[in-house]
Length: 419
Image (cartoon, rainbow, N blue to C red):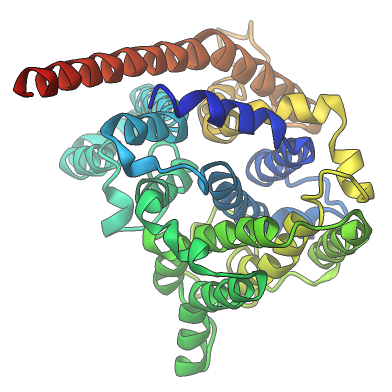
């Protein structure tokens, strides 16, 4: 592993595609605005905010694309050390931010029940249920049994669903590599897309009506449901490897992303039916009717964008705009922005009502307060990464390298003694 790590770091620097970091920033902003932006006043972007799962689909595809792009030439499972280094690189920051977010959300929610006598009495009667729910969430097992996204830090469902993809990738990477040409990889990509959207279409045609909430959660929030989407991103990376895109096709990626954004803004949002069992506090129309298919239908456009803008020689106007230094630098912190948006929002909930015997006039959730929250969120995540996550990540990586080096030395000495 000690010999494997430097080439990988060099590959990261050489094959850097900065516009994907810029895209991360904008898609993360989209997701945070969907969750936290005030509903009033209405705007022309309301329909786009409902289609936030297009952004989630992008992050799934991008995770598969970059994972395979970096590791397709690496024998990850060659040694325990190389496997451990891969897992540290993929999941450490994710798990750290996930657990910090869940702990903060659990504390703020529990504190809210204490300050409200009615909520506190209800919490006391449901202690066993709450303990089981929070325990299963902290063990990252709840989503496998009940995919409803109701853990203390709701966005954590995404990380829990991607964990099996990252853990199984070293043994699944042969699938996109099995294609001997770009055409074979394209056929595999189409098959994986059909596997991703297939369960939704089968239920839709079988019952001749849109999916119910308890059906939808198993086609989107359940971890195995996202594996085809992740492997689809891996296939796009294989296509780039077999047939690198020329600069002349960059405009196709521009058209794909423009058409997708226009569809998100123009297609009407369906009305929520009275018998809809989804969360009441979510945006009206979310996951209702054709919105259930919007994320998977966006996948071909997102894959086209990933492939056509992967050229090292440019050619894409969208890639050039997304490569702005500000967007690229902020893209390093989008994981923490996504996972820590909820605890910071819960803190702002405390500030809305007047208190302190009239000394505090309250801070209603206005657009101005939301933009301040957004700025504070990014600043907090930058500090979290630079002063906590990255130093810890480097320490664990260095210790793992030392551990692997000692293990290899002891193994060599043992073999020498036997000889």
